[in-house]
Length: 445
Image (cartoon, rainbow, N blue to C red; front, side):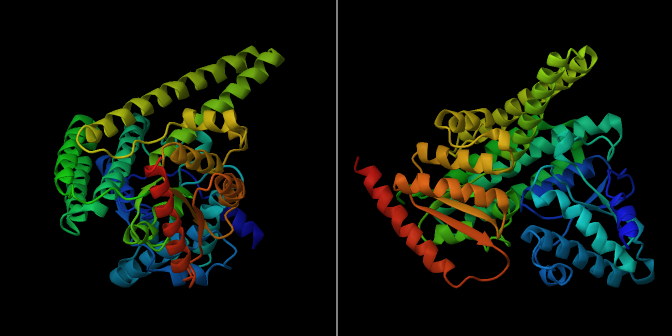
């Protein structure tokens, strides 16, 4: 059995996606369809799977010791394949499907999802020929291997910008929805533009039509601003940090953003783009360490290769910063959404205060620094959203709680494992009461 599993694990690799149906988990309501459209632009049949409807299947094949997103995503793919098998009958060919599950290095369990999912699929004879492909933080999500070399760089640039677009969709929604003249109007606007963007990207994405995308973002921002009732006073600002899947996936976090809004808050959640920028930042850091080592060892050839790799990552980081500025400025000139944090600034905040080190890695770096930055920007409370037993978020909680308590800043942990916690409602209401008190105190200063 061990040897069989070892052989199966070797099949979790970058796969040429030509003529395949790529099954994409819906981690983010806007990011997933935009990513699927980006794949479609390069001839890959990207399909966004329904999410959270197969949770019982996911739990059936897990022990509950796994990270909660592992159960959710496993349930998503098992339910999709079950429906396809029932729909197609004898024509169901599992080898036509590729399940897309990225990974990260380091201590987080996320790096093991696709390996575990491979074992589960191999244990079900009908699905053992379904392949699994991935992108990894180890090579900064390099797309060469899943796409032809001539397309890989273009796709990566397109996917990065569409990720930023998804972030901006979120931030327009969070800025406008609590202040709408007509309830539901902003969600309808977002839905309309999501359709327009997916069509543009799937049809013209290979051309990298960024000017058209920025123009559409500006149009959306103009329309969104008109939906705001200026007579509604500004609500207290709540910053969300935490594990990227749980904080981005409304079904898994039981729609915590809408819940906070219903209790009188305005929310800003950490972005997807922040994570991509962090991955590039970490790659540069790793290459700097390598260069110092090779210089000390006088390994000149290795030093030269590391420098070339560092230079490529530095160019990538500058490109990301440029595109991020363009995406956000297309909106902020019409609507005052919250602009994303820069990774370098987040690191400086931690270093200057000797709170935590980016050398440790994991999302804890971003969450701790992000929470502190929210407070410096006069946010009124912090929510830490994460899977139950998540190590980086537990670290984040242990560090943030005493710091924020000392400053009398409302803070709440929101762990999730798929169950309904009866005290969650009371805890959030208490938190929001404290937040409103802090807003009153700050406004009187």
